[in-house]
Image (cartoon, rainbow, N blue to C red; front, side, top):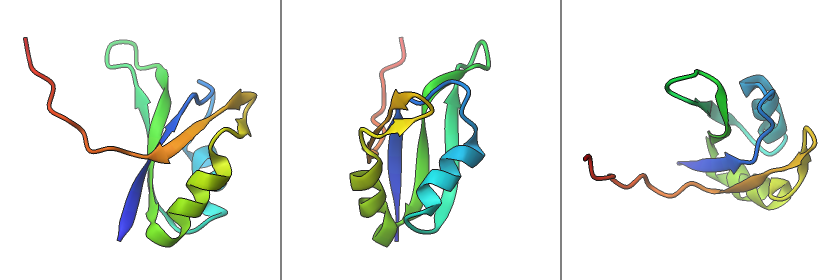
Length: 87
């Protein structure tokens, strides 16, 4: 099983490789997805990391609130996406 982890308050300059490296210290990372603004293509300062269960909880506990590129990142288990009404 793998867990999807939300990572917020990321510096805009961060790369997927840098995020992957930080999380790989705790276990196997399946995927890293940094979210970009649809219109500008610029990073939005958050993303998702998918990794094995065993390391995911340790990564969340160890990295939440830690300095990453000059910002204190927010790390927690991602909640399932809810459908937003379309106007």
